Image (tube, rainbow, N blue to C red; front, side, top):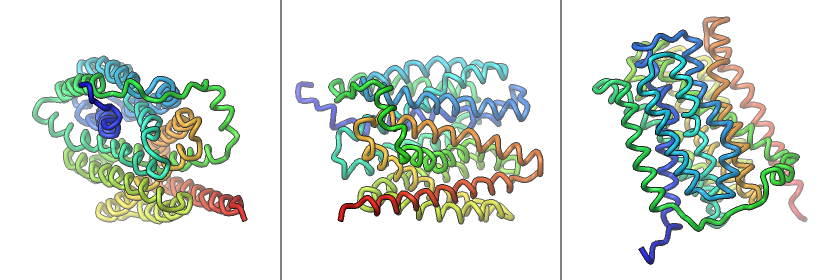
Length: 389
Protein backbone atom coordinates (compact mmCIF):
# COMPACT_ATOMS: atom_id res chain seq x y z
CA UNK A 1 0.00 0.00 0.00
CA UNK A 2 3.08 2.23 -0.33
CA UNK A 3 1.70 4.09 -3.38
CA UNK A 4 -1.85 4.27 -2.08
CA UNK A 5 -3.34 7.75 -2.58
CA UNK A 6 -6.48 8.12 -0.45
CA UNK A 7 -7.38 11.43 -2.11
CA UNK A 8 -8.38 9.63 -5.33
CA UNK A 9 -10.99 7.58 -3.47
CA UNK A 10 -12.72 10.34 -1.50
CA UNK A 11 -15.47 11.28 -3.96
CA UNK A 12 -16.70 7.70 -4.61
CA UNK A 13 -16.13 6.66 -0.98
CA UNK A 14 -17.94 9.59 0.59
CA UNK A 15 -20.76 9.36 -1.95
CA UNK A 16 -21.19 5.70 -0.96
CA UNK A 17 -21.14 6.78 2.70
CA UNK A 18 -23.93 9.26 2.00
CA UNK A 19 -26.00 6.71 0.05
CA UNK A 20 -25.86 4.18 2.88
CA UNK A 21 -26.52 6.81 5.57
CA UNK A 22 -29.65 8.00 3.78
CA UNK A 23 -30.78 4.41 3.28
CA UNK A 24 -30.75 4.14 7.07
CA UNK A 25 -32.27 7.58 7.71
CA UNK A 26 -35.61 6.74 6.05
CA UNK A 27 -35.99 3.11 7.10
CA UNK A 28 -38.72 3.91 9.65
CA UNK A 29 -40.83 6.07 7.34
CA UNK A 30 -40.54 3.50 4.55
CA UNK A 31 -41.51 0.50 6.66
CA UNK A 32 -44.03 2.27 8.90
CA UNK A 33 -47.11 0.90 7.16
CA UNK A 34 -45.75 -2.63 7.68
CA UNK A 35 -44.55 -1.96 11.24
CA UNK A 36 -48.02 -0.67 12.16
CA UNK A 37 -49.46 -4.13 11.54
CA UNK A 38 -47.50 -5.29 14.61
CA UNK A 39 -47.21 -2.09 16.69
CA UNK A 40 -50.32 -0.04 17.33
CA UNK A 41 -49.76 3.65 16.50
CA UNK A 42 -52.18 6.55 16.35
CA UNK A 43 -51.91 8.87 13.35
CA UNK A 44 -50.29 11.54 15.50
CA UNK A 45 -47.79 9.11 17.01
CA UNK A 46 -46.93 7.76 13.57
CA UNK A 47 -46.17 11.32 12.43
CA UNK A 48 -43.75 11.74 15.34
CA UNK A 49 -42.05 8.40 14.65
CA UNK A 50 -41.37 9.65 11.13
CA UNK A 51 -40.38 13.15 12.23
CA UNK A 52 -37.92 12.37 15.05
CA UNK A 53 -35.05 11.15 12.79
CA UNK A 54 -35.58 14.18 10.53
CA UNK A 55 -35.49 16.68 13.41
CA UNK A 56 -32.38 15.30 15.08
CA UNK A 57 -30.63 14.53 11.81
CA UNK A 58 -31.10 18.17 10.87
CA UNK A 59 -30.08 19.63 14.23
CA UNK A 60 -26.84 17.63 14.26
CA UNK A 61 -25.71 18.97 10.89
CA UNK A 62 -24.02 22.07 12.32
CA UNK A 63 -21.72 20.17 14.72
CA UNK A 64 -21.10 17.50 12.08
CA UNK A 65 -20.09 20.16 9.52
CA UNK A 66 -17.79 21.88 12.00
CA UNK A 67 -16.22 18.62 13.21
CA UNK A 68 -15.65 17.49 9.61
CA UNK A 69 -13.73 20.71 9.04
CA UNK A 70 -11.72 20.29 12.23
CA UNK A 71 -10.95 16.56 12.16
CA UNK A 72 -11.64 15.44 8.58
CA UNK A 73 -14.23 13.10 7.11
CA UNK A 74 -12.74 9.73 8.03
CA UNK A 75 -13.26 9.81 11.84
CA UNK A 76 -16.77 11.31 11.43
CA UNK A 77 -17.93 8.55 9.07
CA UNK A 78 -16.36 5.82 11.21
CA UNK A 79 -17.98 7.10 14.39
CA UNK A 80 -21.36 7.59 12.69
CA UNK A 81 -21.59 4.08 11.28
CA UNK A 82 -20.46 2.52 14.56
CA UNK A 83 -23.12 4.49 16.47
CA UNK A 84 -25.86 3.57 13.96
CA UNK A 85 -25.46 -0.15 14.63
CA UNK A 86 -27.13 0.30 18.03
CA UNK A 87 -30.42 1.97 17.00
CA UNK A 88 -30.78 -0.40 14.06
CA UNK A 89 -30.61 -3.44 16.34
CA UNK A 90 -32.86 -1.75 18.91
CA UNK A 91 -35.47 -0.89 16.27
CA UNK A 92 -35.41 -4.40 14.85
CA UNK A 93 -36.54 -5.64 18.28
CA UNK A 94 -39.06 -2.82 18.89
CA UNK A 95 -42.48 -3.68 20.26
CA UNK A 96 -43.90 -0.29 21.32
CA UNK A 97 -44.22 3.25 19.98
CA UNK A 98 -41.72 4.38 22.63
CA UNK A 99 -39.16 1.91 21.23
CA UNK A 100 -39.61 3.39 17.76
CA UNK A 101 -39.13 6.95 19.01
CA UNK A 102 -36.05 6.08 21.09
CA UNK A 103 -34.42 4.18 18.23
CA UNK A 104 -35.45 6.84 15.72
CA UNK A 105 -33.79 9.52 17.84
CA UNK A 106 -30.36 7.94 17.45
CA UNK A 107 -31.15 7.22 13.80
CA UNK A 108 -30.92 10.98 13.30
CA UNK A 109 -27.12 10.55 13.11
CA UNK A 110 -27.62 9.14 9.60
CA UNK A 111 -29.25 12.37 8.44
CA UNK A 112 -26.44 14.51 9.86
CA UNK A 113 -23.80 12.67 7.80
CA UNK A 114 -24.62 14.87 4.79
CA UNK A 115 -22.66 17.80 6.31
CA UNK A 116 -19.47 15.75 6.36
CA UNK A 117 -19.05 15.28 2.61
CA UNK A 118 -20.08 18.78 1.52
CA UNK A 119 -17.47 20.14 3.94
CA UNK A 120 -14.71 17.68 3.07
CA UNK A 121 -14.92 17.16 -0.70
CA UNK A 122 -14.53 20.77 -1.99
CA UNK A 123 -10.99 20.80 -0.53
CA UNK A 124 -9.92 18.23 -3.10
CA UNK A 125 -11.09 20.18 -6.19
CA UNK A 126 -10.71 23.65 -7.78
CA UNK A 127 -13.50 26.19 -7.35
CA UNK A 128 -14.83 25.74 -10.89
CA UNK A 129 -15.59 22.06 -10.20
CA UNK A 130 -17.04 22.27 -6.70
CA UNK A 131 -20.64 22.49 -7.87
CA UNK A 132 -20.34 19.30 -9.90
CA UNK A 133 -18.44 17.51 -7.12
CA UNK A 134 -21.01 18.40 -4.47
CA UNK A 135 -23.71 17.44 -6.97
CA UNK A 136 -22.17 13.99 -7.38
CA UNK A 137 -21.92 13.65 -3.61
CA UNK A 138 -25.50 14.86 -3.31
CA UNK A 139 -26.50 11.98 -5.57
CA UNK A 140 -26.27 10.08 -2.29
CA UNK A 141 -29.91 11.12 -1.86
CA UNK A 142 -30.53 8.02 -3.99
CA UNK A 143 -30.10 6.07 -0.77
CA UNK A 144 -33.63 7.02 0.18
CA UNK A 145 -34.82 5.53 -3.12
CA UNK A 146 -32.94 2.29 -2.49
CA UNK A 147 -34.78 1.91 0.79
CA UNK A 148 -38.11 3.06 -0.68
CA UNK A 149 -37.81 0.53 -3.52
CA UNK A 150 -36.16 -2.32 -1.69
CA UNK A 151 -37.15 -2.36 1.97
CA UNK A 152 -40.87 -3.10 1.43
CA UNK A 153 -40.01 -5.94 -0.96
CA UNK A 154 -37.49 -7.45 1.48
CA UNK A 155 -39.97 -7.02 4.33
CA UNK A 156 -42.61 -8.97 2.40
CA UNK A 157 -40.28 -11.98 2.30
CA UNK A 158 -38.38 -11.71 5.59
CA UNK A 159 -40.44 -9.40 7.81
CA UNK A 160 -39.67 -5.85 8.84
CA UNK A 161 -37.54 -6.84 11.85
CA UNK A 162 -35.03 -8.89 9.83
CA UNK A 163 -35.05 -6.25 7.08
CA UNK A 164 -33.78 -3.65 9.58
CA UNK A 165 -31.12 -6.10 10.80
CA UNK A 166 -29.80 -6.40 7.23
CA UNK A 167 -28.81 -2.74 7.48
CA UNK A 168 -26.39 -3.58 10.30
CA UNK A 169 -24.36 -5.56 7.75
CA UNK A 170 -24.15 -2.41 5.61
CA UNK A 171 -22.81 -0.49 8.62
CA UNK A 172 -20.03 -3.04 9.10
CA UNK A 173 -19.07 -2.84 5.42
CA UNK A 174 -18.90 0.97 5.51
CA UNK A 175 -16.82 0.93 8.69
CA UNK A 176 -14.27 -1.30 6.95
CA UNK A 177 -14.22 0.82 3.77
CA UNK A 178 -13.68 4.07 5.66
CA UNK A 179 -11.04 2.55 7.90
CA UNK A 180 -8.94 1.40 4.94
CA UNK A 181 -9.76 4.01 2.26
CA UNK A 182 -10.48 7.16 4.27
CA UNK A 183 -7.97 10.02 4.01
CA UNK A 184 -5.93 10.21 7.22
CA UNK A 185 -4.13 13.38 6.06
CA UNK A 186 -7.09 15.54 5.04
CA UNK A 187 -6.59 19.30 5.27
CA UNK A 188 -8.18 20.71 8.43
CA UNK A 189 -9.86 24.02 9.36
CA UNK A 190 -8.85 24.98 12.91
CA UNK A 191 -10.87 28.19 13.36
CA UNK A 192 -13.25 27.76 16.35
CA UNK A 193 -16.93 27.42 15.50
CA UNK A 194 -17.85 30.61 17.37
CA UNK A 195 -15.33 32.62 15.33
CA UNK A 196 -16.65 31.12 12.08
CA UNK A 197 -20.24 31.92 13.02
CA UNK A 198 -19.39 35.54 13.93
CA UNK A 199 -17.86 36.03 10.48
CA UNK A 200 -20.89 34.82 8.52
CA UNK A 201 -24.09 35.26 10.53
CA UNK A 202 -24.71 38.84 9.31
CA UNK A 203 -24.31 37.86 5.66
CA UNK A 204 -27.78 37.83 4.06
CA UNK A 205 -26.61 35.24 1.56
CA UNK A 206 -26.22 32.62 4.28
CA UNK A 207 -29.88 32.94 5.26
CA UNK A 208 -31.05 33.19 1.66
CA UNK A 209 -29.24 29.93 0.82
CA UNK A 210 -30.77 28.40 3.95
CA UNK A 211 -34.29 29.35 2.84
CA UNK A 212 -33.61 28.05 -0.68
CA UNK A 213 -32.46 24.74 0.76
CA UNK A 214 -35.38 24.71 3.21
CA UNK A 215 -37.67 24.67 0.18
CA UNK A 216 -35.72 22.45 -2.23
CA UNK A 217 -34.20 19.83 0.07
CA UNK A 218 -37.01 20.22 2.59
CA UNK A 219 -39.52 19.34 -0.12
CA UNK A 220 -37.37 16.38 -1.14
CA UNK A 221 -37.32 15.00 2.41
CA UNK A 222 -40.95 15.85 3.12
CA UNK A 223 -42.33 14.23 -0.02
CA UNK A 224 -40.04 11.23 0.50
CA UNK A 225 -41.49 10.55 3.95
CA UNK A 226 -45.08 11.64 3.17
CA UNK A 227 -45.67 9.92 -0.14
CA UNK A 228 -45.47 6.20 0.74
CA UNK A 229 -48.31 6.55 3.23
CA UNK A 230 -50.09 9.22 1.11
CA UNK A 231 -50.26 6.92 -1.92
CA UNK A 232 -51.67 4.11 0.24
CA UNK A 233 -54.30 6.19 2.05
CA UNK A 234 -55.37 8.65 -0.69
CA UNK A 235 -54.86 6.66 -3.90
CA UNK A 236 -55.29 3.09 -2.50
CA UNK A 237 -51.94 1.82 -3.81
CA UNK A 238 -50.35 -1.15 -2.07
CA UNK A 239 -47.17 -0.53 -0.05
CA UNK A 240 -44.81 -1.87 -2.74
CA UNK A 241 -46.40 0.23 -5.52
CA UNK A 242 -46.32 3.26 -3.21
CA UNK A 243 -42.62 2.60 -2.60
CA UNK A 244 -41.90 2.48 -6.32
CA UNK A 245 -43.87 5.66 -7.00
CA UNK A 246 -41.95 7.43 -4.25
CA UNK A 247 -38.68 5.94 -5.48
CA UNK A 248 -39.12 7.57 -8.90
CA UNK A 249 -39.44 10.94 -7.16
CA UNK A 250 -36.21 10.29 -5.24
CA UNK A 251 -34.23 9.06 -8.26
CA UNK A 252 -35.18 12.09 -10.36
CA UNK A 253 -34.13 14.52 -7.62
CA UNK A 254 -30.86 12.68 -6.96
CA UNK A 255 -29.87 12.59 -10.64
CA UNK A 256 -30.83 16.21 -11.28
CA UNK A 257 -28.76 17.33 -8.30
CA UNK A 258 -25.64 16.47 -10.29
CA UNK A 259 -26.96 18.47 -13.25
CA UNK A 260 -27.74 21.42 -10.97
CA UNK A 261 -24.20 21.51 -9.61
CA UNK A 262 -22.72 21.15 -13.10
CA UNK A 263 -24.86 24.01 -14.45
CA UNK A 264 -23.95 26.21 -11.47
CA UNK A 265 -20.25 25.79 -12.31
CA UNK A 266 -20.94 27.24 -15.76
CA UNK A 267 -23.70 29.81 -15.23
CA UNK A 268 -24.89 32.38 -12.69
CA UNK A 269 -26.28 30.22 -9.85
CA UNK A 270 -28.73 32.87 -8.64
CA UNK A 271 -30.25 33.24 -12.12
CA UNK A 272 -30.56 29.47 -12.31
CA UNK A 273 -32.37 29.50 -8.96
CA UNK A 274 -34.87 32.02 -10.32
CA UNK A 275 -35.74 29.56 -13.09
CA UNK A 276 -35.88 26.69 -10.60
CA UNK A 277 -38.35 28.44 -8.31
CA UNK A 278 -40.49 29.65 -11.22
CA UNK A 279 -40.81 26.07 -12.49
CA UNK A 280 -41.34 24.67 -9.01
CA UNK A 281 -44.11 27.20 -8.34
CA UNK A 282 -46.01 26.17 -11.47
CA UNK A 283 -45.64 22.48 -10.58
CA UNK A 284 -46.76 23.11 -7.00
CA UNK A 285 -49.90 24.90 -8.23
CA UNK A 286 -50.67 21.89 -10.43
CA UNK A 287 -50.11 19.61 -7.42
CA UNK A 288 -52.56 21.69 -5.38
CA UNK A 289 -55.26 21.37 -8.04
CA UNK A 290 -54.51 17.79 -9.15
CA UNK A 291 -57.85 15.97 -9.76
CA UNK A 292 -56.42 12.44 -10.13
CA UNK A 293 -53.34 10.27 -9.72
CA UNK A 294 -51.79 10.85 -13.22
CA UNK A 295 -51.91 14.65 -12.81
CA UNK A 296 -50.66 14.36 -9.23
CA UNK A 297 -47.70 12.21 -10.30
CA UNK A 298 -46.80 14.54 -13.18
CA UNK A 299 -46.75 17.57 -10.86
CA UNK A 300 -44.90 15.63 -8.15
CA UNK A 301 -42.18 14.48 -10.51
CA UNK A 302 -41.80 17.99 -11.93
CA UNK A 303 -41.22 19.22 -8.38
CA UNK A 304 -38.64 16.44 -7.99
CA UNK A 305 -36.71 17.75 -11.00
CA UNK A 306 -36.64 21.30 -9.66
CA UNK A 307 -35.76 20.13 -6.14
CA UNK A 308 -32.77 18.24 -7.50
CA UNK A 309 -31.56 21.16 -9.60
CA UNK A 310 -32.01 23.58 -6.70
CA UNK A 311 -30.16 21.34 -4.24
CA UNK A 312 -27.17 21.09 -6.56
CA UNK A 313 -27.09 24.85 -7.19
CA UNK A 314 -27.26 25.79 -3.49
CA UNK A 315 -24.27 23.62 -2.61
CA UNK A 316 -22.24 25.22 -5.35
CA UNK A 317 -22.96 28.59 -3.73
CA UNK A 318 -22.14 27.71 -0.11
CA UNK A 319 -18.46 26.64 -0.39
CA UNK A 320 -17.67 29.31 -2.99
CA UNK A 321 -19.26 32.08 -0.88
CA UNK A 322 -17.83 30.95 2.50
CA UNK A 323 -14.57 29.08 1.74
CA UNK A 324 -13.01 29.75 5.17
CA UNK A 325 -16.13 28.88 7.16
CA UNK A 326 -17.40 26.11 4.91
CA UNK A 327 -18.07 23.54 7.66
CA UNK A 328 -20.18 25.87 9.78
CA UNK A 329 -21.96 27.45 6.78
CA UNK A 330 -22.72 24.02 5.31
CA UNK A 331 -24.02 22.88 8.68
CA UNK A 332 -26.37 25.86 9.05
CA UNK A 333 -27.77 25.60 5.51
CA UNK A 334 -28.07 21.81 5.72
CA UNK A 335 -29.73 21.99 9.14
CA UNK A 336 -32.38 24.46 8.00
CA UNK A 337 -32.92 22.41 4.84
CA UNK A 338 -33.41 19.32 6.94
CA UNK A 339 -35.96 21.10 9.11
CA UNK A 340 -37.75 21.85 5.86
CA UNK A 341 -38.54 18.15 5.77
CA UNK A 342 -40.09 18.24 9.25
CA UNK A 343 -42.71 20.95 8.91
CA UNK A 344 -44.64 19.98 5.73
CA UNK A 345 -46.00 16.65 7.06
CA UNK A 346 -47.38 18.40 10.14
CA UNK A 347 -48.70 21.37 8.16
CA UNK A 348 -50.45 19.02 5.74
CA UNK A 349 -51.89 17.00 8.64
CA UNK A 350 -53.14 20.20 10.31
CA UNK A 351 -54.91 21.50 7.18
CA UNK A 352 -56.24 18.05 6.30
CA UNK A 353 -57.76 17.81 9.77
CA UNK A 354 -59.46 21.17 9.29
CA UNK A 355 -60.57 20.88 5.65
CA UNK A 356 -60.30 17.17 4.76
CA UNK A 357 -58.01 18.27 1.89
CA UNK A 358 -54.26 18.63 1.30
CA UNK A 359 -54.80 21.55 -1.11
CA UNK A 360 -54.40 24.33 1.53
CA UNK A 361 -51.10 22.83 2.69
CA UNK A 362 -49.78 22.62 -0.87
CA UNK A 363 -50.96 26.21 -1.46
CA UNK A 364 -48.84 27.37 1.49
CA UNK A 365 -45.87 25.63 -0.14
CA UNK A 366 -46.51 27.72 -3.29
CA UNK A 367 -46.41 30.88 -1.16
CA UNK A 368 -42.92 30.05 0.17
CA UNK A 369 -41.70 29.21 -3.32
CA UNK A 370 -42.75 32.70 -4.47
CA UNK A 371 -40.74 34.23 -1.60
CA UNK A 372 -37.68 32.26 -2.76
CA UNK A 373 -38.20 33.43 -6.35
CA UNK A 374 -38.27 37.07 -5.22
CA UNK A 375 -35.20 36.59 -3.00
CA UNK A 376 -33.23 34.94 -5.81
CA UNK A 377 -34.10 37.94 -8.02
CA UNK A 378 -32.83 40.32 -5.29
CA UNK A 379 -29.52 38.43 -5.12
CA UNK A 380 -29.14 38.63 -8.90
CA UNK A 381 -29.69 42.41 -8.77
CA UNK A 382 -27.32 42.77 -5.84
CA UNK A 383 -24.69 40.77 -7.68
CA UNK A 384 -25.05 42.96 -10.76
CA UNK A 385 -24.76 46.16 -8.70
CA UNK A 386 -21.58 44.92 -7.00
CA UNK A 387 -19.76 44.16 -10.26
CA UNK A 388 -16.79 46.49 -10.87
CA UNK A 389 -17.02 49.03 -13.73
